[in-house]
Picture 1: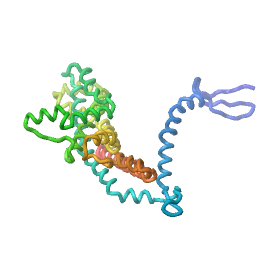
Picture 2 (picture 1 turned 120 degrees about the vertical axis):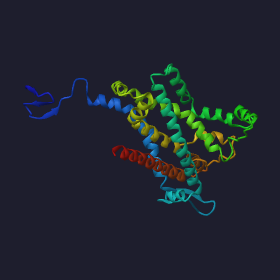
Picture 3 (picture 1 turned 45 degrees about the horizontal axis):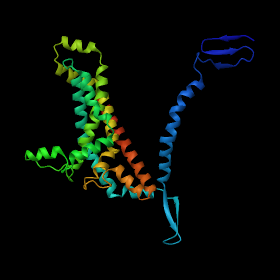
Picture 4 (picture 1 turned 30 degrees about the vertical axis):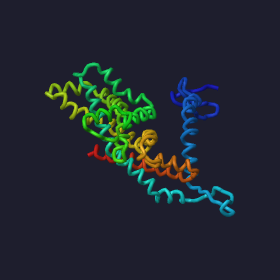
Length: 315
């Protein structure tokens, strides 16, 4: 039996069948071996919990046999979603983080952009040191950072409050009117360096020929930053904004830590804290419905922001 090869397929003269010929070293089993380490944890720790939460959100607990009867879980349809959508506490927490995001996200991204442009300037020395210094807060776990800042905010322990008091400025960082912005300060301190690195990486990918042409045209460093660098790194800004929107709706560690020292931070201060409080009370079905609603709101906001920015970019 002889075999003819046309470079991409093999024909057997005996049977006349054709089968794909794989390149040397590339086999389906090899590809599968590389994909399995990703898909197994993805299914076990992401897809399965999401599917389980979705199923639980359509169930409810019923008691049969009077006040002390047996509890059973049955199909409840959209009962849990009706309760979530009618919960004033839940929507108050959503509105709180929405206000948080409207103010904190633009401020943080502006700081990240300014620092990235500063580090990308040819006039700046010791760039490695400044880059590491800006990124260092992100290397600290958020829980540890929140605990540290809670001491800096405490009226009786904080050197900042003491110094401001000597200067005649009396401010309570943990009061009802200021604690949200105290949390925003912690998030900004934590995530500015992370977003800066994303923007800085995009700046490093800009060809140097563009800068040389701009210098020949007499453009200054400020003009190149505003008219060349910022428009080119706009996709990186959109990416960091989407990440920030998602992170805002998942806000949990900072307010949960400050709740230990700030009475104004309740157990339902953010959507995630509200979900945890409901689950701690044993109502896992309603907590699952809240999780699904948070996921949908997060998707709508992030996807809507991307569509809005893409439409403006196309104009």
